[in-house]
Image (spheres, helix red, strand yellow):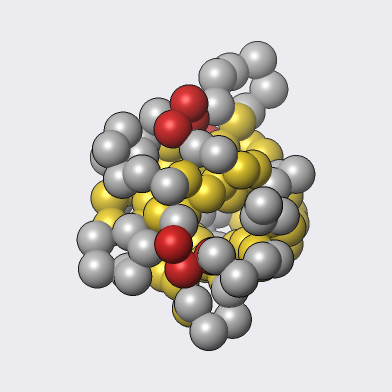
Length: 124
């Protein structure tokens, strides 16, 4: 069992940066691939970024490539999402998830655990 708690969201202006954190409970965090998704009102949950269990592999959505960076610290049971050059279209609730498989890591159905989400709002 893994419990995930996101933090770091907030209201920022376009061009600003934010760093989201996702803290995991449980001893098995390092066994999971971790991903960030986001969901805007009226839209489906959208893949943002994912990182393999040891951080050796990462994958990003085209919309955030070059602006966002996912990383993890297995000693702290935490995964991060550094978001730079934020745009109004990045506004959404951001969720982290844990998956036991790297296959289809860009798809929500792959994930076994989810956090409660943190709101990110980018004003123009």
